[in-house]
Image (cartoon, rainbow over all chains, first blue to last red):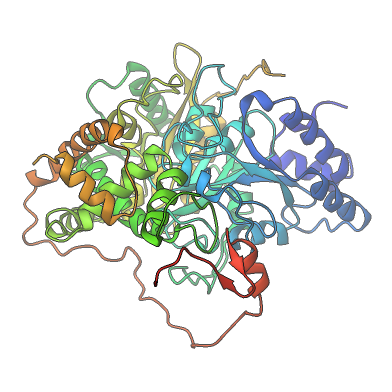
Length: 485
Length: 95
């Protein structure tokens, strides 16, 4: 039998439905791949026995009408999974076993899939290279010394290396789209409120969104349909009718108006990124879309705004890790306060501590107006830029990242240069709107590059359709050689 | 504006994180470069701008104040680093 694991989720689902492969054989094929890919360090926890039981259960009593019939899936270790350790990539949660299941994973399982394991990520999703994880660096299958992006780096790496047919990540400032771009895969950050945040380890609650990471746009539509939906347990969940993204996927984009924001051409951007952007524009034009120059004047202020809002919310969210009710507790500390201080010092890594300190500082007495309030005002301006543009256009096309995947260690000593990775992805989170990254070319080293499509709130179908059209016409093929096994 | 070592120690105290004396210097350097970056925002006049408090065009839902789960004390306590029968245990606070 040809290797099934290098196929798309949609193709695999067809094979399961037509009984060309059983759920058990499919699961075994992924387990075999995972066991020979330890070098990539993508998994924090594996759940093989449980997965094989679920696969057997499915094969004995198959239901082929489900969206994800008998499909094993690995997910980012930021989603709480009932009775299965959930670490968020942190030492402070190294022994945490949730007694509940996150809503989005529950949705995936109720559509016929089951858990294969939990994927490595930056600690509390704070990072752009997966180098802040307590459980070690993840390697990008694209190249031995390359980072897979972050924070959903275990997810992007596992997907690109055929260790899971699709996966999910979370995106607070680019944590789905940037790793997708670095690994030649598709990643979508949905509209804020489309996917429930309930049961996801919180980082910055007004920005966090879960979303799909897949090999193709069609797969992305299937996964988004499976995971999204109203949830009364999340007070910011949007109550609306469920969409059939995969059924309604079409590549006819004739007459659509695509905005090209001039502010996304930044200084020192590699020529290849510019060329990729041109390629994207040309494809859209050839398919009958209309390109319109637009301006999003506050773009350059998005990252500084983000680095106030996100740490402020994180410092508040992460106050819960006190060593009392769950998680790691230091053996040192002679009184309660010292126990807290030692627990948090030993339990959190450097980047997380840095962000908690930034957040505590900007919220502290006497500084709130100068930083946090200022940032909330600029956030309003950034959102208004998008609102104004979307009265004239259907979607926006930009590059996903200002570079291709970089080397491990290259940016670890300079936090600001690391933060600049998210320059094209962060504005979307601040405005709460959806965006996807899809692979559309390679640089001169052969490393994948992504294009980003931004839509207005709840316009996921439209950006998926445009992505579908680009995918069919850009001639990108992910040619990863399995050097690690 | 620059942040000095004393300020860092004060903020660390507020955040309940003990900071190694050896690491204070590098932390001060990192935070100063991050704040220099953040302070680009001061270029903008935002006097007449309303702060954004929600990106959703809906108000938060309220729910009835009812218990929807419960009776899972054992499960909850199982994750505690230290417990005693039905309680979480912390270092002694009252003499």
